[in-house]
Amino acid sequence: MKEEKIFRAASGYLFLLLGLPVLTAVVFAFIHEIIWLGVVLIIVSLLILPGLMVVNPNESMVMVLCGDKDPNPIINTGTLHQ
Picture (cartoon, rainbow, N blue to C red):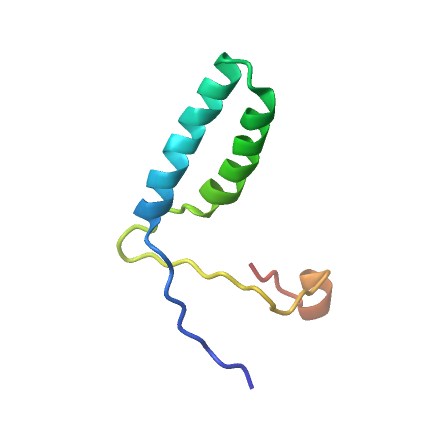
């Protein structure tokens, strides 16, 4: 039996406020030729910013972490699951 768990996510504004200065620091690092710092900050921004998503009113998003991984949904069930 599958159990639904409630997840409390951190505010997106916090990660936006963290991500924008990191991107600004990337630009300044490359301008001042501190390549290693720029590369590290790009990696940090790739970890921070992809999680930002806009969820409009009357919409929802679902994140499945350990769900059923069906390699070919059309052959196995006859319909395409998305």
